[in-house]
Image (cartoon, rainbow, N blue to C red; front, side, top):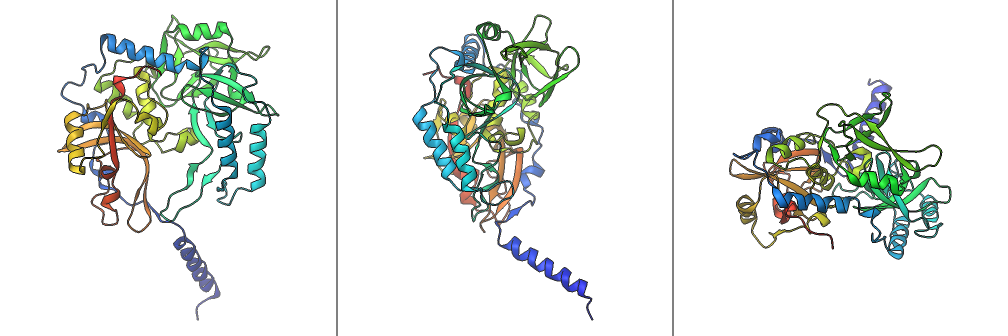
Amino acid sequence: MVPCRSFRTLFWLLLAASLLGALPCLAQEPVADLERLPQDVRTYLPPDPDRPLLEGAAREEATARFLKRHFSPWAPDFPLPDAAKARKGWQDLAGSEGLGENRRPVPASLRRSWLEAACAAPFGEENRCGVVLLPADLRLLPTSRALFEPLTRDGGGGYPFDQLQNSTLKPGEAVRLLHRTPDGAWAFVAAGTASGWVESSRVAPADEAFRSRWLAGPYLAVLDDPTALKDETGRFRCLAPLGTLLPRTPDGAALIPVADEATGLARGIPVHLPEGSAAPFPLEATPRNLAETANRLVGQTYGWGGSFGLRDCSATTRDLFLPFGVWVPRNSGEQAKLPGRDLASLSPVDREASLMREGVPFATLVHMKGHILLYLGPYEGRPLVLHNFWSLRTRDTGRILVGRCAVTTLTPGAERRDLDPEKSLLHRVRRMVFPLEGRDLP
């Protein structure tokens, strides 16, 4: 006779199997590229790794373009977000169904409360210059709660794709403070990259004296990811991610913004960064320097829109180029609008050949709808790329979960029978982009 406990165990195993069978498949099986290809980016350096990719006037112009865009929210002619378009976006999000942290639908009443808080104050009633004090999530509605995309049959959606996560802002970043929720907990801000809601405690107004010091430079770019910033008393202030830009003092320290307890206005205090954790801005854009910076990102966990203090594909490329004074927009679609060449009309074989013939290693981005990658150069007759990506689609409506920044070919998983070659990265490539060529602001 089989004990009752064995029947109970069998029952629960069968129930679990049936439930798992009803969910999209997220496998975590090996992908040959990730095991075969060296993940040290320096492996792929060209024969002249210390040759500057930007020199002389071109480098100065690129830096000037970067600083103009980076500090654009403080400019008198900074274009404010369109109020009607912003409100329409809030309404659409609040009206869309999504999943909460418990993977259950977010109640309509809760979504409606977020919308009411967003729309309560007159749009742009504050409209003054501000600065980010602490790393901040840029949210599309004034809440830290999640609204994960609905699950799809191909395994997409759900965690970690929070529809409310727009981007992240770094300490010291310039913003325009527009208005706040009635309780004052959230502020709607516009940065040089995007607009959205941040927790009010993470931003402060910046008066003319503060802005003058911040604009004067020179600067340090944070390279270690993240770097703990401590003031002169040893008190921890915040974590600064790679790509944080801070004014540099004559003795080599950095300034970070804090809110004055009496006035609430931002003021700068010095912090000393650990040796090697930052470099004078702009760092010289050589393949070696870019490779060493990229190595700090390899293996990092994927984070949609900067969720959980992590990076997605476009945040990876943007933060990689920031220490070099090269402005790259926040999302992949905008990055694709930089100078470049269309590849969509070419065959997959010709796309690879064109990339290896015309692409500049460590200075060319590869774009496809919804994704962006950095071209590293040829290796064993194939172009290699660095990118932060979530998964690879299988034939049977499942996905191979990767979820990290890695070096791959444009056909990762090609050795697997369960992957559809027509859905490979190579088949989706549309354009190569040259961010170092730059572009003046419109």
